[in-house]
Length: 178
Ligand SMILES: O=P(O)(O)OC[C@H]1O[C@H](OP(=O)(O)OP(=O)(O)O)[C@H](O)[C@@H]1O
Ligand SMILES: O=c1cc[nH]c(=O)[nH]1
Image (cartoon, rainbow, N blue to C red; front, side, top):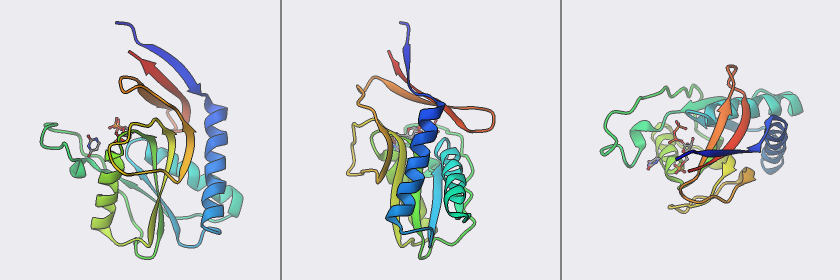
């Protein structure tokens, strides 16, 4: 059966959403003190880098940036067979940091649960906040984002596709309907 895809965010819309989220992070945290970004591989790491750049543009401060591979923390690891393990790259201490976890899509919440467990095994941040480009609903765990690019009501069978270009910049978000 043919899959129908609709663009729901184009590049300017994504850029505006990321700029707004950068301002919201600064507002909520009253600046950049102890704020650090951790992106979930893959997708969230690219968006976290975009947010770091925007925060630098606004405040003139380069806040710490890391990426987290949650593969080994998945709750379905046993049933998934072999999965590619990506790279976790967290070179700053988490202690006393206000961590903003970043991912492209929030669906069941299981990835973010895994990401929080992975983070807590590395260190003890002061707090963890969550920034998401697209919240598509259907949560299976009590997880809610602090910063949302766009709420997109979906049916369970639909899929949200976040497209990145060769420079790992987001170019469009599509909803794919089976
Ligand atoms: O809230 P959840 O139900 O956990 O879904 C959200 C996750 O799903 C997608 O990742 P996916 O598992 O497709 O892996 P990928 O992004 O690495 O391709 C997306 O990038 C989020 O990380
Ligand atoms: O732990 C996880 C992460 C993503 N998806 C799942 O089903 N489980």
